[in-house]
Structure formats: C-alpha cells, structure tokens
Length: 144
Image (cartoon, rainbow, N blue to C red; front, side, top):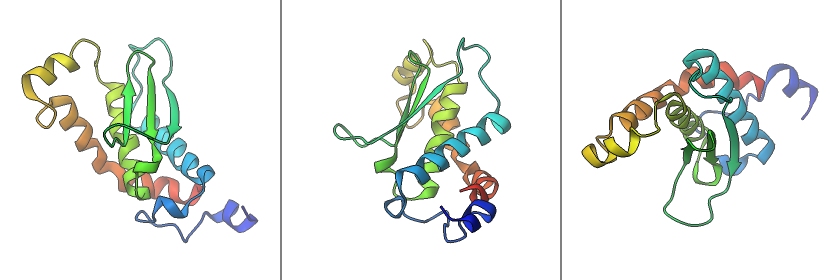
C-alpha cells in the first residue's frame, strides 16, 4: 500500500467494485471496519459473556451462503468468495451482526418452524439492517 492510499484511502474503490479485484487483506479490512461500524452504531450484545469472534472463510461446499452467525461459538462467519462486490460484503456483515445482537438461542428455531425463512422476524430484521450499507461505506471507504 502506498503512502497516498494510507493517507487518503483508495479512491478507485466503489461500493460495486467486484471483490474478485481485491486482495484478501483489503477484503479483511472492509469486514473489520464494517464490524467496528456495527459495534459503534448498532451496539453490542451485553447478554453474551464474550465479545463475538469474526472469521473470513471461503465456502467450498453446501448451499451457497454469504455468512452465518454461530450462537454456540459466538462467531460471525463471512464467506467472502460468495460476496460478489463490496456492497454485498458489507450487507453480509450487517446481516450477521444483527443476528449476533438478537436473542437467537431457543427463539430462532421456534420462529423458523412457525414462519419459515422468508417471513422469519429475525431474518426480516437482519435483511432490513443491510440497508445501512451506504452509511457503513461512507464511513470506511477512506480507511481502506
């Protein structure tokens, strides 16, 4: 990274820049900065004993998934290879972070049986949170 990029950010990056054009370090930086924005602006889950952990992985099998929150491990997984651009990467962080904030344990599966995935109240809330992606992008783009 050159000095100008360090001082002023990478002006070539746009929210629709394909992630295939980014190196893993840049992708990781976007994910970390996005989660920091979430902590500052959406809060933290004080009912959890530990701060969440974050993992950036490539999904290699199974149904395509952008991310997931594992409530047992208190861990957010971002499958960056399935996120085609920066917008989708940030939206995935927002979505999974929302699940981290929710009272998932015991409630999620019960509601899934009642509503299914598309009408699940926790999924609706997480999808709505994805709408903050431009707020996140405008705060982090000069730090990448």
